[in-house]
Image (cartoon, rainbow, N blue to C red; front, side, top):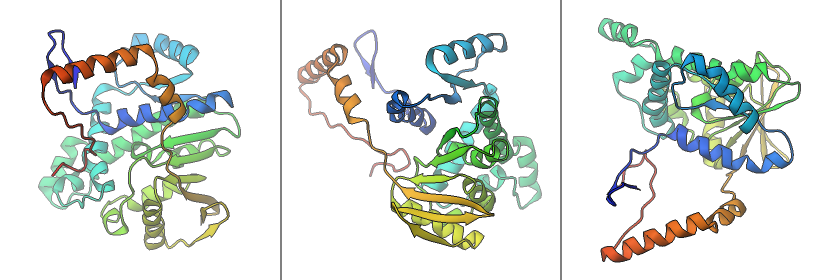
Length: 297
């Protein structure tokens, strides 16, 4: 909710997961800046004209240690739609039943659906192409032994694309979303391709052990892999000679930074303003947080 110039309030559109997770990643990695050099690679969410991209990249690199990925507007929109409308429901335990899933993965069963797939474009191929666009600047700026963190279902193909181009990279993949059970995950036509890509990472993290168990179950059921527990709460797998470790580790929030920010004058004044506005309204106000994949009852 935001306030307009006339003092009225209106509802803003809910941000999609990529925007929220982007801010979450920046805040979570803030503490690493004192220990090592951290570079951020990601999209801007804006369509930057080609003639301005070099200047924008230079400014972000020198001032913020950011490497922007310039994805064409139409491609970025289709990529976000595929992640939000197709992948995200599946990873949130919504069993796919519509023809849209078949069209998205170019696995149509009838002539009409195949024609629709050709006219819309193969969304999975587009998804892989965008993942490659994110990997290319990493490879260009990579040094032997660098650690690369990839976050969430928007970059599922990043481990295999990066591992084949930077073989000495230490790759960690973190899921900010759940991981579905094997019964739901196996409905994805490219399920094995996704698993093989993730297993090219050296370290895979989930928010809780339930999601890690689902991932391990998929590896056993679909790829026939065995896993074993190791010291430190890790689970060890070997895929084509590559050693991969899985762990459940909820990141949480940076409480120290959050507490410090809440004491800033600007935020204190903003808090007082909204408290006064709510008191003057003489109405009971209920603040509710929710996951946009789980509608309120």
